[in-house]
Length: 163
Image (cartoon, rainbow, N blue to C red; front, side, top):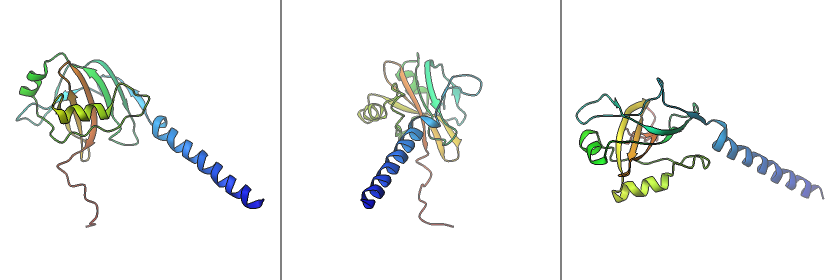
């Protein structure tokens, strides 16, 4: 009988800890963000290093202080995709990161499939928003745009050797 109580206690503790971990990952650290002086959507023009502001309408965004790669945003751009492609720096290794389930406008799977199929284009929004982290914007032909921050693929992420 004692073994059943101990096993039940372990299972109950695991369920409570799992629920706490899920809640923390999905809700605890995120906050909504709006465009303003501290947040402007930008893109880096070809052959330049400094980003320039781009018009972002219908903006919805989230971020967290706990990690530089938790930023996600959904918005629209009025500039046609061919003009963006001609003017701004492409981001060839764009890999959208998953967003919390409640931030439903951002689907990493849909964006990733569209990028691989050529139905959307990824652009460098800002290099080095944090150490080894870039902001990327993917734009669809209909003007839908999605932004996220990801580890810079040009920086070696190998941590197996310590100097």
